[in-house]
Length: 132
Image (cartoon, rainbow, N blue to C red; front, side):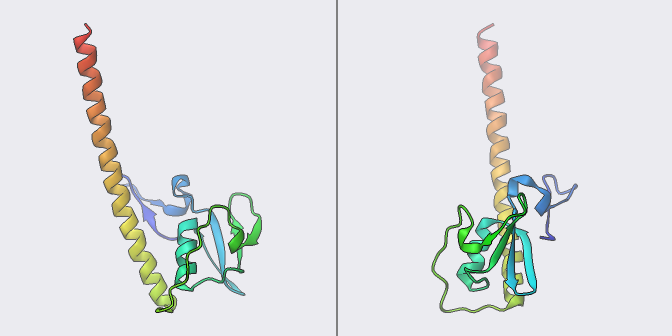
């Protein structure tokens, strides 16, 4: 939730306020502790790693409604990993690593998108020039 993202590596924005990331959920990690805002995908990974209980509470940040994690619309629940039981530090390290990985993927996708937009603009100008 404290991570920041950037489109240009100059201007940085807190990830949770970037609507496209859909960091819309607060999840209960213990009776007195909450994590988030986070994404549905991150919630699924927490469940898989055994960091969250399926019957724990979740709050939708957009609507302020509280439901059980298992009731989150669109949540894909996979079987828990039996061979690991990470602690908080391990989870934190894993999540930071995962955020970095996703930021790199996002950067690559944006670069591809820019290349396609440039190619489209070039083709559009060629079509316009040929029809003159």
